[in-house]
Image (cartoon, rainbow, N blue to C red; front, side):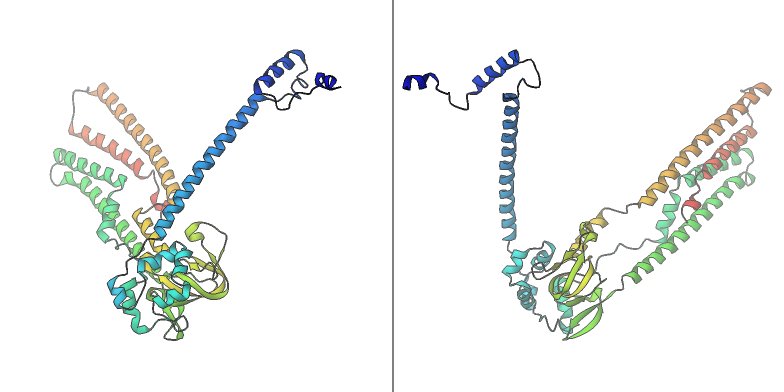
Length: 415
């Protein structure tokens, strides 16, 4: 019986890859139906590709874990950075560095906030009671230590700057060259003062255009500046000297208790104290349209955001250039004056029209000049030149310049 069973002994499962490859080759030669040929035979090549792909993914995950571990180590080291308390802050009775205080709200540093005892601990280190607010007598020292809630503005452009900008117009530059050539040819052909008339007339026209353009732009800049100043006159409800009052956002200081309601713009960086169903729109900073809900677990509020719903009280922790909004404004100011999408499109259209006008002006000048040379060669020959010929060529050039001048209707594009 045992011998009989040995003759029917079933081989072990999971044969080697070499055996499977030989079996696959044999099946491929015997079975001709492609649908049934390898139905019960594993595809070893595909299996090898899958295993290689799995190993590659595992390697990437391993590298990602190492990078994450290094990043967490770096962040932990950064969070453990000790800020030095300025001497003037210590003398004023404050026990937290202005830079560290600004970093807590800006970086949503819950760990550091917890180390300082939460919002209550921060208020104690700022020498302020959450029920009473700051004292009016402390405003000057708080502005000195923590800064004022103001942003540096670009100096106003002078009238002469607008004069210089108006002179940079390509059309006016061409007209200046034309005026200089006209004066030179006029003095050589007609003498003083008759030869100056055409050139001086062009110069006076340029002076009139530049003056009107500069005056108009300068007045508009003053109007926009006044409008911007009026737009920034925003008042907020704060608790000071134990009672609620209204103050300008530029008068806010670190330690103020600000009352927020629907539609308000958060004037400074701060910490949530108490409130009801406060949701914040941070799209102006992050670009995300989903509202962010502030609570005791997530108490961080950033300047420049808007209250979408609810109401709350906020402890001011950073003002002015120490806020996230101030850092953003500083970055944008370093980038220069960028054109709006409408200006880019209009400038593109004006450039295309200008190139077409320049092409037609050049073609017109060439045609008129060829016609003049052909007529001159037939009548008197090309070797005989007179002062009137120079004036005629200058007139052709003026016609071409006129085509260029009217090519771009700037007054229609820019009111």
